[in-house]
Image (cartoon, rainbow, N blue to C red; front, side):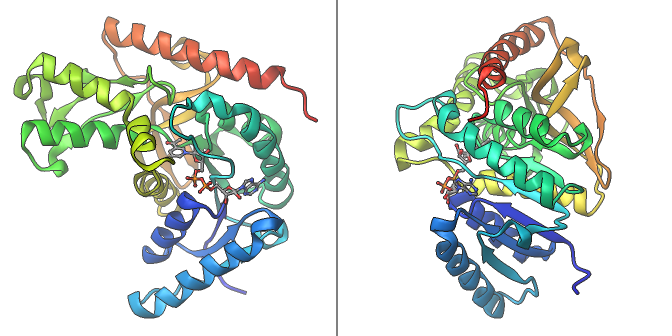
Length: 315
Ligand code: A3D
């Protein structure tokens, strides 16, 4: 029996495949690529392709494709991309009717086979899907997070770097709130290696960058006909790595709020420390009045879609 860590990827589509490739290259553990029975062979084929790639690249991870939850048993990390992505013209919230039953079936699998895992949800509408995953599995809030903030911050950071004509490595920024078009880029915490971004970029340019960040996902859907997958996968792997290697990274993540920032019984993006115990700390950073107002608007949208989920009985 392997003593390597085990990573179960639920959904072997675009993000699932890229997640597997990244986890393998980083040798984070052995990988199980799970999909529905109708796509079991697809998952097996993708896994085989990635295992053959190990011979060229030189990694030792074992990668298996499956549609049997038993193969996911005992996973240390579960990353969930099961569900459908957006098509041009759709909002993330439009996906709720299709993705809610999918998340519920995945939650049943996680509860039975991976009850000790650190779970990262990516399926949209993100904040509502991760809420349901936690509710249906009963997992503690330290072990259930949603990936959105790392990706939204990456988009914000890229646009800032291009505008300021500086290396992407020197840009530090955080996007909080729900994963929707009213997400909250926190300008007061945005710096270029410690120098306030507002000193280097004019206000109207910053406003345009914020607007582009908020619709950054939709911009790609419009161009590709489906949603982004390279950066979403990298963002989730950063979170998984922080847990597996006990890195104690400060990453914006959707977590279950129990009074923090004034919100209760809601998943929304806030800065957290992720380490070997999962979400080790939720940081309540100082926000300007403007940022607080934006967060309240975002929370209202998240609450709306979460209420839809809460009111939808299991079929
Ligand atoms: P796609 O390539 O279609 O892959 C999704 C996979 O999920 C497919 O292979 C399906 O067969 C599979 N699936 C469906 N039902 C189940 C089930 N019950 N159990 C296991 N697998 C199942 O989509 P994708 O990988 O591009 O996107 C996946 C999800 O991530 C979508 O909901 C996207 O909207 C979402 N997404 C979120 C972000 C965030 O930042 C939060 C970014 C990009 C995409």
